[in-house]
Amino acid sequence: NEIKIFSPATVANVACGFDVLGFCLDSVGDEMVIRKIEQKGIFISHIEGFDLPYKAALNVAGVSALAMYEAIDVDFGFEIEIYKNIKPGSGIGSSAASAVGSVFGMNELIGRPFNKTQLTEFAIKGEALASKCEHADNLAPALFGGFTLVKSVAPLKILNIPSPEDLYATIIHPQIEIKTSESRAILPSNIPLSQAIEQWANLGSLVHGLHTNDYELISDSLNDVVIEPYRSQLIPEFNAVKEAALTAGALGVGISGSGPSIFSLSKGQSTADNIKVAMQNVYSKTDIDFDIHVSKIN
Ligand code: HSE
Image (cartoon, rainbow, N blue to C red; front, side, top):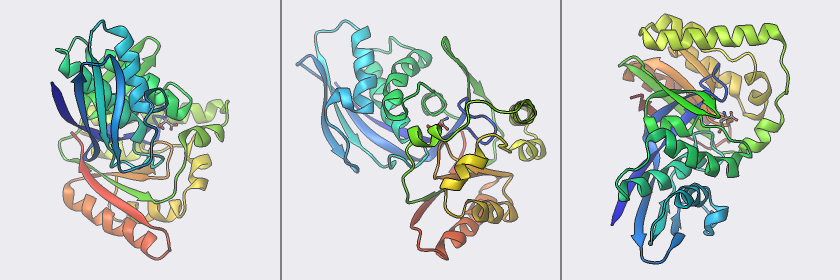
């Protein structure tokens, strides 16, 4: 009657895939316990790690749970405990992990009536509470694992993208908070056609490189000419971290989601570890606190 789950952190956008591409991290995530209870409704009974609202309608995990609860006809309710490890506003899908965790757990407890795309539909409601916009590029990889591409939100269509066996991510998180809603507000609503062409050429090439295990093409395609020029200004030492990671062997470097976390992709664990040291060195020379993770992508 209860289930304990790990809800993973995710990297959205992946340089050229703003709002559509994302991948799942296996080494960072929240834990949640979902329990069936007699009282009807959705109740958040415990939150650890960060100060978040207990009222279901104001909590990301609660909102997605309520969306699913409205779609099922049951004479019991659910209680949710949240053990949050992913800091809100860190850029590695904190709200998505919460939004996905509750609906994934509830679905397991009632015999899996919903598939992963349907669960994403409910989770989008929770994600929208945090970012003021319905996007699924963190939700999809959290539910499906590996790399995913959100082909469209309405109707929701999610594609699983295969990726090379030896692909690793190194992610550094400077301890400042950037709200997704705010870092979306600074983006232009129109972009020049020349930029759009470069961006979609890179996105198509990146997806092709992931499919064909072509590390050189992956490296060549990991560029963001649309979003990074705006958002990188909000991230301390962004250019220095990027330079250091590339020198240490990164295939590419970009802003993780809406920042401030910075991700790199690389081939093999030892390069990923070298990048970790190189990124750390940049922030160690400043008074910026940070944490850093290396994760295999599966
Ligand atoms: N695609 C979203 C953005 C991800 O960059 O705003 C953040 O959650």
